[in-house]
Length: 111
Image (tube, rainbow, N blue to C red; front, side, top):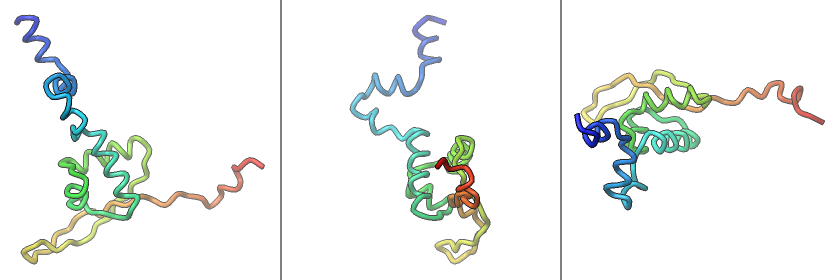
């Protein structure tokens, strides 16, 4: 394998994108941007996977939710029903931000 072929095989896709089309690189819909959009959307209220997929331009909502949870964002999911365009009822997850536990916050605040 040549050095060029080996470099191309192991290249970071973002670096390649920046070299090929620097003006479009700022519009790259990567995982970080998708996580940011989902976080902002959930701050406005609960949403289903389909809503997050459509509104946040995110093809892998469940993966991004898992990443946000690992990063410390408290996202809850509960089963709900959604009616499809053809009238069928489907079970789906409704994601929302968990309320912060502030029951004893005053015990830890400094005077």
